[in-house]
View 1 (cartoon, one colour):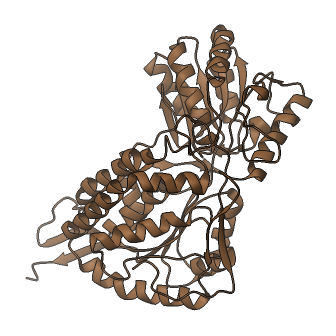
View 2 (view 1 turned 90 degrees about the vertical axis):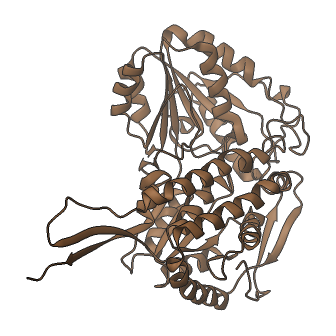
View 3 (view 1 turned 135 degrees about the vertical axis):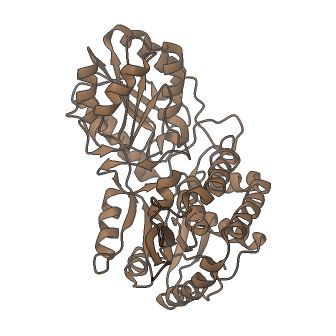
Length: 473
């Protein structure tokens, strides 16, 4: 369990904290020999874990959750120092979404993993069983380090798989906490392990014939690397590769509700969310008051040191990420966009640092990077539209398709528009949320596969049919 294998000092992992630029975590990476040992341990553990009754697996997961909830405050502080989200918000990752998803998966597992029995046929016993895939590699990102990883780890274990986690170098303590939580729960040796790996060794891990499934959350470039790594064997990968998620505010929307929720959807976690709001289309009848309200609320945000309880907007994960967003703003303004937020109102915002003021752009169009390329930062473009048809055209004009949200009082209109949106999830009057009862999935360059819900369990298992003749005469 955890990291029982010795590490080589040849290569090291460094987590540079965006809070103050210091090295927050530094330690040696695992070696190819360590990877081999972990895979052998996983293979040995999987048969035993598969034979463990589901009710026992459920108990392990709930004991693990008890540990995580009990340590939510210190876990939240670690998240803040590793990736910069304000300490005001970080404990909630465990106490809300993480806790909700673990409990839901535990309760759903008996139904999701139950045998599928076709219509009866005299003289035969026939059913389809959900079998675990075997050894699951989870490659997790830093932006929501627990929420992205739990979607795969807990359902995989409930289904009878064993897991090897490779977490981001930006959030290595997350993997440590998983290991500590499962150890506290008494999880058997080898059922969950984690490795600190270089990109090269992570690709070798995925390519190894002892890995039966890969769950990856990251960039499109990373998704292509995953597909290449597993191309010599007949397995699949679940790929969540990001988004450029749109919102459409119809003329019948509740204006105040839309403003409040969309500002939060755009700027929570400094906009570093694959399903965060990155572009907004507003009907011309609401455009002016919507923009005014959006700018007013944005200016009330407090950018600063995320360890300060008064801060609700922290630094981006690194200076290079902030500079990319600065570049998008400059390019848009050069092409005719207007920036509505005066950076001077956010004293902590400073060039050459990851501290970046939020920005709202109008007079934008789809020739600009800010409306087409994933920003992953505290910036949003707002466009005026004249009809549902025009909004739909712009929402679908994207290489991504993770979520889209509609703000309206008309459920029928939302369903009608939603049917035509090229996306994995359609929201009405909310955004930036994962419902554990619904499949989390996407289209186009957002990736393939699904997590959460019954469908998430289907992606972590394989069907095995039993056709038993009970009468031979």
